[in-house]
Amino acid sequence: MVHLVTAALFTGSVLLILLGFRTVVQPMMGLALLGLALAMRPRRGRLDPDLPTLREAEAPALFGLLGGIADTCGVRRPDTVQFGPAFSVTVTHYGFPRKRSLVIGLPLWAAYPPRQRVAAIARALAYAAPRNVRSRAFVAMALESLTAGSGAMWANDTAYISWHANAYAWRAEDVADGARRFDRRGRAGEWVLWIPRAATAATARLLLRLTLPATRCALLEADDAAARAASTEAAVAALKDQDLARPVCVEAHRLVIEAKTHAPGRSAAAPQPDFWEKVARHAARLRARRGSDATAGSLDASRVARLSAAPQHRATITLDEPGPTRIADELRLPEKAVVVKMMRDGVAVPQEPAEPAAAA
Image 1 (cartoon, rainbow, N blue to C red):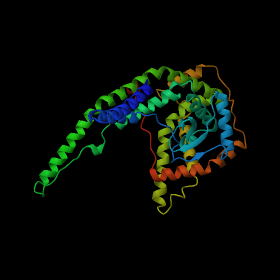
Image 2: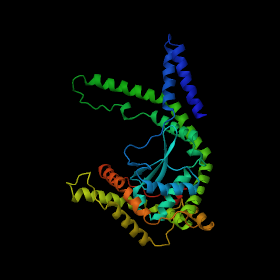
Image 3: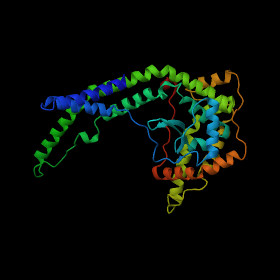
Image 4: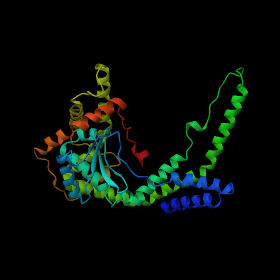
């Protein structure tokens, strides 16, 4: 229905402009509807140009591991792999064929032991499978169109003028009057866009609400796929170690500041060679200090309990030498590129998790 409404808006706007070309009202209405149709147009996904990208020919060992995980989960193999500075592993789609790109956050990759890396990748690949309604082409593109369209209809900072001039300045009253007229036009435009903006936002919320049960089922199936691929123990440990996101990112931020402070002459092209080793050692210290009696966050406790009560699985995907060494060699250039990006842009530190009552 979202795509049909977008097509109807586009067709109606073109007809109003062409058939009512001799009038004034109809072309203006057509242009307004055309703007709405363009705001809600389906977006073609694309790879993030700021993130380093690897393809199978450039990293055969890594793609061999990912292919084995995807086959175990019963999903399509990723076409590309990108590496970013976030503590996460996600799957994105790009191009009209909706190719799959696995986005691996190197802080998570450094903090997790090998088996937990397999569990995190298996969970991400299985969660983005077609069984998840939000990952299917029509629903995913509808959500992207509604979100982008609603955001495009919000007034930005340039819609208003803040003018505080000296009353004795030359032509100050004329400038102040022009600023007031500009602000009135901005408010009028915002009120005109209020109805389509509210409609797109409400439709996006409705679509999210309708797909929520299927998304929850897909999340539980992704946990099962992670347990089959990496073992139940590794899947549970990966869920519990999600609380390492903030301290690990804080440590990465500290290392970036330390590098800029103690070596101000260091260029961005020559970052610390042992940056990710330091992050991994810090995560290991945090894990050892926490002990084996760690509990998952309030939002993941039920998933941990479900996996622990289910039949236990052994690891299907095992990492034996020389596989990990070859993968580490293939990741050296992306690791340096991500460190350069972090030294240039900084590190986004996740917020503290919400309290159980607030989260509920």
